[in-house]
Image (cartoon, rainbow, N blue to C red; front, side, top):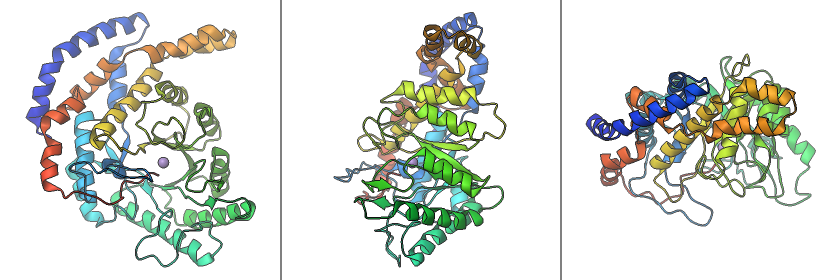
Length: 424
Ligand SMILES: [Mn+2]
């Protein structure tokens, strides 16, 4: 893992600058009536889940270019997640994907505990055929016309719950690739009815303290119609299933320019927002690193979340879901963790009382400016101080590079040529 002395030496180099930046920012925020230490506390309390599959190099349907020292097993992946958390102090949980991460539950929890990690939502997979699988998902899984294929997909989801219970997870995320590539290929109404009926079977197997997340996605792999293509379908599903069923919003799963923050607001209103898959996109489900394309949109999503943070019953699972094709996945995941945390803190800086006043007065210009004041504030010093005081690195990426971790695991891990790093 990362040697503590490396973190300390790297932090010692950066502490004088951090202190100066922190004092200056503290003074500026004080003028706005904001206590910087409260923001540091907020940043320290923030935590999200890293997707196990994100630690490997991703790929497109054209090619995958493996990087050095890629994780070969779930235990390697958990080691990498441990590195991400130890340096950022903001990624204390991991989201597993079954069957990719199938292993002895006791071994999984032992490895996680070794790194101070816990498990967030389980992810099922009925969008691929596994080697030992009887029925193919080529024409669908939970919505397949064949009852035996649907039953197999339901059974797989129940198994994910069973594994999850043994490792302390409390949620199952269901995303299916089911749909159609041709108009007329499927009966859209009956296909959706089959989906609801399969989901009800899964819901029946959900323990009382668990939640079921329904994840929508506009298109791909079905390019004409997708069964759970939008938040409306996801909400219908969650409402029909019951109290433990919630909607999960993957930021990349929308058409360009869609107002995602308004979807977030609507789902909060309906009491059905369960969590997120954070990433960024330019054209479609590009699975790019969070905050790299449209950081303002990420901020606007967080603005809704901070605005609603005292809503009774609101309990959100924050997860990353990205594909790292040209960067070191550990570095990308650390940067993304910090960008998501940054947007959260920036949203927390918004003067909500002033904003509400401008909204009531229909002062569009000042309302918009009040919101942007949060986004324009450089909160690096808050995030750096939060990491430093939690035992993390002021600069996680430079500390990671100085540690030589990637070179070390490159010697130990075989080169992974297969597909593996999936996009969900
Ligand atoms: Mn996703």
